Length: 423
Image (cartoon, rainbow, N blue to C red; front, side):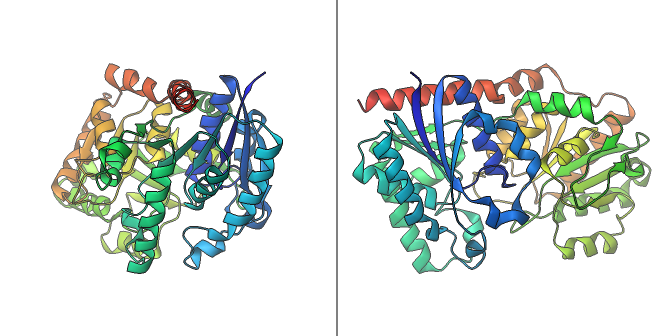
């Protein structure tokens, strides 16, 4: 008989969030390793505008889903915790635990209510618990507008979770260090680092279905390959949204310098941004007179965005500036690895993305250093003109660490260790 996992993850496909994709991908691999998985998740009927039906077919046969009504809008009204989901989810989970013999509980934030559910359940049931934080909570740069009262309350809840969980998981050592430095060594010993992962099989499906055509979402018609992806220019592609402190402004300023200092090279570059971008940056493109280089395409489905990325000569990562070690490992960076193409990183030199990019032998520039951004753009164009814009052996070997199979095996060991310690 298979061992059983009970998983709490508000974000699951078809919700179109990076967390949905990463959790479902990891669970699929755990399923192939022999786990019988039940997932407690949100009712996506109330979140239709945030869904992507193309995600549903990837991994849904690998686990059972139990959905509970919820609303995304409450988070926009200030309820970052999504606390209205707490009691209904706890009630359903209690019944599942009474009716089934689960070997382990895993809670995946965000939102942080998932860990609060774990907190309540482990007060009542003697079940080993892994709390997968991924990113910082109380220490997040994205909650700068939260009140001191909110931060104080979150700090208390975070401590309770870390004290009660048997294992706490982060996707990078910088996040672990930032958060756990305020806790005693005994709690720090609970922590493990397992990164995001990519699925090579998805890349295989992209290459067999998108030769010269992009498949767009339901709001747009099927499009022929646009001129902005012409092979006559070096194609640099970014997939994802810009929000909060993550801004394309450093990139734009680097491109402006490129047009001023080296217009002949600038003419050979096409930068395509795919996703939501605040209107202020669209105006900035015009003001900086880089509209010949930068094109913005609407937010696309997950598979569509990967199809666009497949036409790139190099892929682009843009992170927010940081005065400390950058504690976020963007899942898009790990997804980029499936393409085996050079990655240009505009990211803090001290941080999780920079560590990955250095191991891959990719170019990096700090978001605050416009001259460095100019230099790496110039380098990419020169390599492209010389037909040397390729990945090397280090890139290929390092990428293998982040495959779904490798990370799934690592997480499986973590599960078995957590269960064994708590027998």
